[in-house]
Image 1: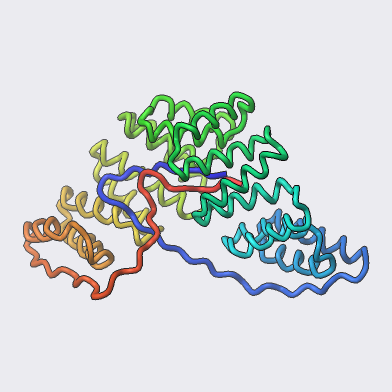
Image 2: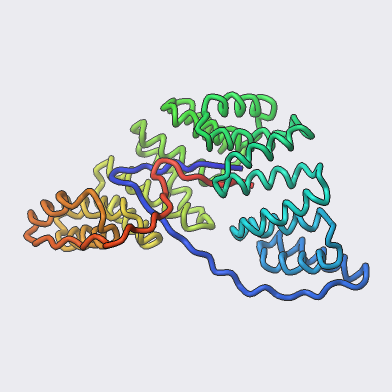
Length: 355
């Protein structure tokens, strides 16, 4: 499912780029006997459940070589590719699953998620609508339709849909989560707060929900509660750097609002160790260093920000701040060619998938 993370911004938009290195796939021989086939099926399932998706892919390819028209194998292969962000391969696999089983609702749902991930909302909508013809009351399909509506910024329709879902299935955490997103968009903070509290009641280890709840607490001025939620996320040692960096960033915002500048600086600096491209964290760290009288650090952060983002609207501000600290400003030259647009990591909303 699609999820959003609320990340508070005190200064500017933040940019993020990431890459993934895949290990070499092991070649698995095509099974010749029924026992060999069952053995590879077991190995594929085990590998997937243990998070070794490349190994799962290798086994599933061997199974497909044995039974090229097996929709279950193609569906599993699509899911394995999706887990390593190989969305084009995943799309191909799900299409093959549907070709061999035109009523495969699970493949339709997963393909709609892939289309949504690739920004093809029209295709995602068609696929969800196709699936709903076969299973109109399926909450996952209803929620997937809600995701598409959010993609299209049709928040009113999405809200009605999610409210209907959680009324029928009150323990469906993704429904409560995305209702929180929509209520936040409408600046209904009390309702959004309750939505995320409902998510945590269902699953107290939903780190994204805790981060969003903390962000709302900050906006409502309940900084101590926000700090408590964010520390809980950090101490729980979430498995991905984005979640951890976001938690440290918002912790820095909370401490900044509390005027605990030293703690705020430490949080922003930790965020930068995890994500060295966080422009907003550089700005906040530089400003805090100025308040603390740490000129060398402030200069370093302003210059780092300028080097990483030579085309920015802070040129005059940086010039004035550095001049006040006795430093002559030599701005980084703007690139002669148009820079390649980077994927924006929104400081208020960052899409996440919950599958």
